[in-house]
Length: 325
Image (tube, rainbow, N blue to C red):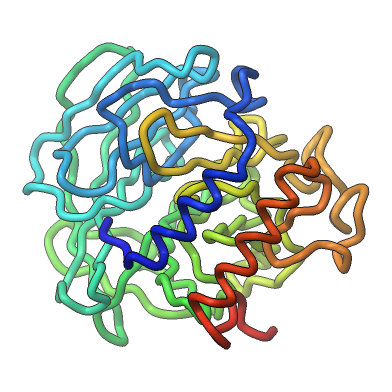
């Protein structure tokens, strides 16, 4: 995705101060080692293959999904989607009921250029081999006009698809129809405000919570039947360009991904998950965490956080990273 020069400078500063990628494996974090994956923009834990995460590039790649083994960081299968047009700006991936993979070709860098966007759906392959899988393509429009979005999440209990638009001062959760149709246009309607410049979102495996991440932090919402209720801030790691989030298959971890070659996927305990922090934010109180969720980080990363905050203040002036609640 094209970024302003100023934002790229902020991303480079983060990379300069961040710790090296963890050598831990699996749900403790890993590094994507496939040189083809330079713009990992979405992440989803496999339902059929333990330890496997599905990802994809942003734009200018093609109709490809990659199955990455979290124990090694290596791609173990490449899936080519057939039955669709050429992807334009793929930003998100989610797995819903029945082990169906949903891919969100929902990016719009000029925030209104495209009168419609697309969602692709395909069954998660039962075998991890290079293969071509036929997908269903759905046309998506928003009830209040075209917009940019990078977050797509499928409700694991109902199978309903949700999108969050990407607005610097906060966006909205958009709800799709109860069932997507391939024979017409699917209208997504705003149902709740989201207090974040969102780059991805993911449902907990039980469907009770919605985690939303941005470049500088994250928010956990109680799903509350779709009338989302803000619960707490998330401990989102500092990353060069934080683009993705997924719950681990067992729901105990939140996995945060970033763009770039050899990009890290970093793990944090999921609030409420076994071994995770409490709903009040674990060892540190929610009030003690900054907008970027940097509490509990090592000294060198905290230095990077403060440096990034200073640069962000200069670059964005009085603009807020989060909307007021």
